[in-house]
Length: 372
Ligand SMILES: O=P(O)(O)OC[C@H]1O[C@H](O[C@H]2O[C@H](CO)[C@@H](O)[C@H](O)[C@H]2O)[C@H](O)[C@@H](O)[C@@H]1O
Image (cartoon, protein in one colour):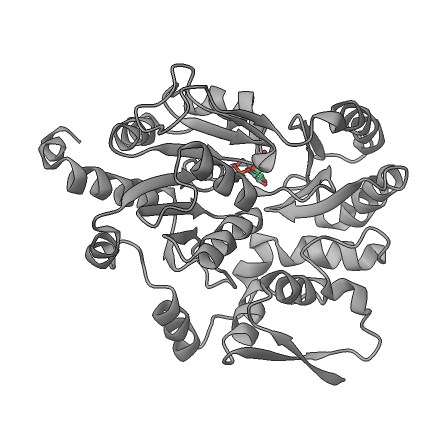
């Protein structure tokens, strides 16, 4: 074994490294808390190419794909040994609960325009087995409606924009679907929008549409032999779900996905919660979408804006990182477990997200309190 130091600010490298090695998310956390640099043991033969980014290496061994799929699996996290108390408290010291820190958060935002960015699955709706039934509760919808009356609010999702809209059903919001590659603002414009009155609309990967259609069809065909596999067309990207696939079949599924991807060097593979995500290689992600939306709202180069991004997924890390780089606002990770993250705070689950959003509304409009 050799020791390898990885710069702590390079989240993607660290997570990818750990995942490719099949480390649990808890081990990632433990490794990441060792000061400005992390120091982890890596096998001598560990290929350097895996250090590059968060993606699953398309040419990598199938066993590395499966390790990566396991590492992001909640089952694995549940069976991992509990964190030592000092590790847990050290993580919470660095990422306190956004509910516990509410007053401090409000103080930091004073005099600035709060802009809200919300991921959908796992943030506004609980994770469920069937992606077509990930409904948002009426209470959450009511809360988000009130939130949007107080602050500009956007939903940023890996799902196709129409699908996420069909779950949220609030016309007054901004929506960024397909991991931010498909952005649209409210039909009637927004009372918050400074500058141009034109509606916001942007598609970063239009030319990939025919390719994505093709790949979707091939993936449906290839994976139909694997019970439980589900392919979801997210317009500019495709999700291959393995939540309902038996673990002993993950290898087979990985082979099927790889055989399709082989013919498409312009597509890359990332992963979320029990899902493989196929998307264009363009430099666009949820972080870029956040930046685009801030600009569209007239907040480019503004010092008086305070963006808050809430998300649970690895793809949300791009947005957390963007906020850190901009030195504006902050990210909130939704997770029950300590995880390596660029977010500043955490909330455990969608119910806590709803409590946090309600408190924001009540702070902005004290008269709303009685009506929640
Ligand atoms: O960016 P998000 O809004 O969080 O979307 C990411 C993916 O979310 C959905 O999949 C996840 O939620 C499903 C429903 O709870 C769950 O069954 C699945 O295992 C999760 O990965 C969505 O179906 C994907 O297309 C999104 O990419």
